[in-house]
Length: 121
Image (cartoon, rainbow, N blue to C red; front, side, top):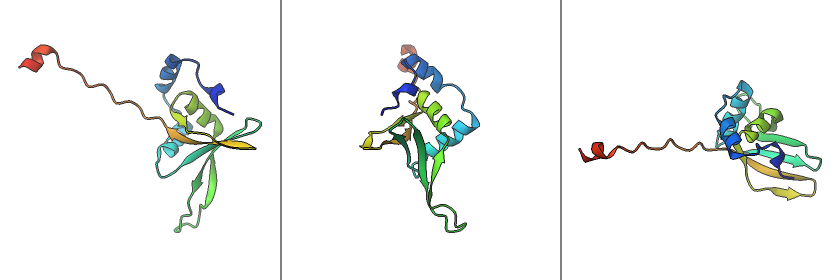
C-alpha cells in the first residue's frame, strides 16, 4: 500500500513544489514532523485511507495529553507530494501498513569557489 499516487511524476516538478510557500496549516504540520522529540507516523488502512498521527505525552502541569493526535491528512499529503516529508520503511500487518514520517533535509547551499586570481593573492 505505498503512497506513490500522491507524489509528483518528475524530479523537476518535485523541486518546484519544494520551493513553493507553505500555508499556515502546512507550516504547523511541518514543524511537528521536524521536531525530533515528536515521532510522527502514517497508517495506511487496507482500503487506502491514511491517518497521520503522533503521541502527545501527558503534561503534568495541565493534566492534558497522554493520547494520539491526528494531523490533517490534506496538509500532510501536500507536504509529501511536494517532497518536504518522506516516509520510512513500511511495517505491515494484515489490516494496515505503518510508515515513520520525517522532514526532508534541504541540502546546504553550495560553497562559492573563488576565481583563480582571488585564490592566488
